[in-house]
Length: 414
Ligand code: SAJ
Image 1 (cartoon, rainbow, N blue to C red):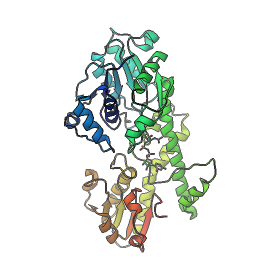
Image 2: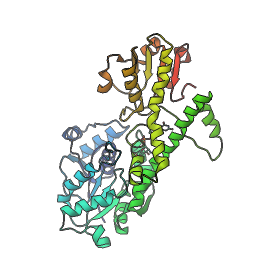
Image 3: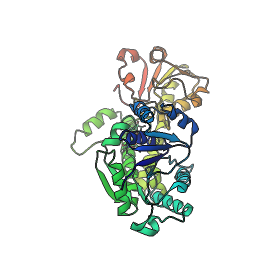
Image 4: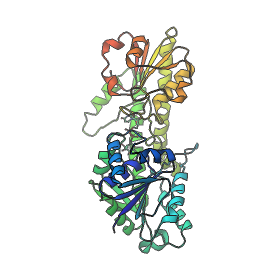
């Protein structure tokens, strides 16, 4: 099987780097995104997201002509679907972007094509995708009916890259590949071997879907354990970071770090896909979500207690991103903490986030919240709330915070 042209559907945090890496291997890549602004930006060789080294790679791919971007799918030998899978208000997965991707590629599919779903998805989503494609293309056969003889090969292969290290991890990480039939898996392995140096491990489609959810649920449960420990330790007057360091000296213990909550669009979302598939059974996974989701409010209560003993204090809030050294504020617990503090405190809040240019709109609307430099905030604050462990904050000199009430949710100054 040969893939001369590969189409990547969805040019976001996963689709765009994947398209660019494939193009850098000499493959003709057609990048498709429904957002015209994104397509216009990319056509100019620029990028709309922040990820180290991605700008150079995209610029080169567009300049050499190996990456072409458009809003409408065109024929290709393989289609990689990397669209968002958020959840709805009730925490049930929203598959509408996958369905829209299926509708958009169905008209250009031809016999022999491979379709791979990369979006993090609930178990059964790939079969759902294949069913939608079959509905729109009754002239072609699909694996759910034709098995190994199908005209179209369908597989699931989850992305597992860590934001901030995407380009390296795309190439180095092992890939789990679940085809709807062994031949589908084989086709997908051939495709990924064009740029993946890690191992491509084959399984069935439902196991591959569950594997991705399991990885992120495992991390969520481990962080929930750390977050619960931090609350227990507050009650007992124990330094949780020292405790975890000591416990982790045991050869079979590896506890993650407590924080102000779990953010981003993966770890805080994906475990819900397991819970919604097995609500009675997935009790630990649901509890972990609840514990992590409740952590921002716990931090807010701690700050309010500190405020109580002071006369209209000035509060420095350090960090808004969902984790260290990135500019991504999506689902960030730090933003939740600042916004709740802004609503409930009369005093001034000086917010420092070195990775963005201005406050997000939701915070800018509150009159008592100001965007500040680190120096100004530390000079003026009575209370310092550390929300993100950015490198800049780790370098703060102890004298800059001495005499102030410090609430360090990440344990960088403990
Ligand atoms: N966090 C803690 N304590 C920790 C580790 C993380 O509070 O010890 C918090 C972070 O501050 C952040 C959140 O958890 O708010 C998530 O950060 P993260 O670094 O754990 O994960 P993500 O969301 O950046 O990326 C994860 C990764 N999954 C795993 O490590 C199992 C990545 O490999 C996945 O590709 C990505 O989700 C994804 O796209 O699913």
